Image (cartoon, rainbow, N blue to C red; front, side, top):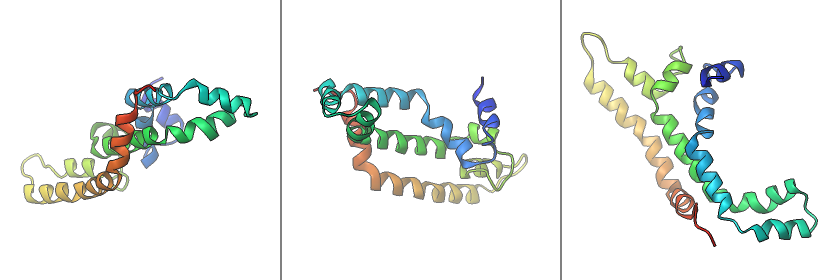
Amino acid sequence: MGQYQLVRDLGLLETVWGIVLPGFFSAFGVFLMRQSFMSLPVELEEAARLDGCNPWQAFWRVMFPLVRPGLSAVTIVTVLWSWNDLLWPLIVTTREETMPLSVGIATMAGQHSSEYALMMAASVMSMAPIFLIFFTMQKRVIEGLATSGLKG
């Protein structure tokens, strides 16, 4: 089943979730989270089981808190990719009210003339939230990307 069909069947067309959700299940996200879990010692899970945790409790109480830096990195990178993406939001959204800024700026270009000053101003203004997110979360992104895949 295709990505568009899945988003349509879930009723997520014309929504923000229809734009962002497929990015969470990207190959990058799966690889980074796999590497985060693989870097954890097996002894932690064994210790949780010896303490009486079932597999779900061992995951939720022991393993998941330890991979939060990787999860933060995947979340931030996915938001950045979704914010800058043009093709997927153009496919998923048709109404101007639900289009993200990247698609809105692209639709400002006319066939015969375009207001480049307005388009450039909108582009600069659309970068402000991304800079804010990155600079406030910079430590988590670097920590999540740096610690993924390191064993021991």
